[in-house]
Length: 170
Length: 188
Image (cartoon, rainbow over all chains, first blue to last red; front, side):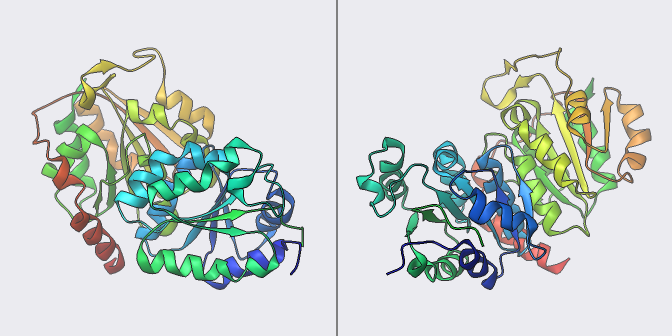
């Protein structure tokens, strides 16, 4: 089992299922491995937002036009966006794909076992909301990404892909 | 001041078949004035109309996207002005229906009522153009030219409520309406 999470593999997986727009707020978890490379990727458009719930609205508008997108945010922003997720993604049955950095989660430790309160509560909150979630801890987990995004758009539901450690820079 | 339904009737003449995102009182007026599959109402509250509109504008850069925002709504999502200015969609027209109150939630005044300038904030955020209209005749004379400008454009309408429209929240947010919108966009 690998003990790293390569950013290049994540980006390739995201692009492989037709995502061409990424809405993002900087997060130190994904900054080097994902955010900087995505900002330089000619095949991806990055929309820099001021608050994470904006990105849920943008994603819904893009979906209404038949376009796939993904949010790249931190778990603090996920927690701040609960109402938008509740209304737009869950109650309106909208596919919204979120890749979420778990700030200060200990690598190799399950989120619910983290010493960080903010990290421990993420999965229980998503479970309470009925939102599907996956943990990306190592390179072995990268194949989850295209399946999760395809599932979200097929089922018109939100999905959260949690970064369990900092992705490595390409 | 412009009566909201009078102003929206004039606007509707200029955008018979464009994508329109609308919220709260403006949405209830708009759906009566311009019933159309390309109306988009399911924004999830909390000021997200402008963000949905940005997604639509990026998704369909070949079509004008009109957002009928509220002043209280926009205050909940002021950062979207910077986001939109940065993304710079040329097809984005952001109307603020400024009545100075949270009309749909008891008519309480917005913070900064009568003092803050939505057009000023948008201009400094980097919108390509901003306008304010408080007179119906001037709005009628100018709106055609405004809609020919390259966006993002913010248009602050100084409004009072006009004739009351039916408040059918369930109908406005129905799943069938969202499905019809997606189907209509596909046909464009």
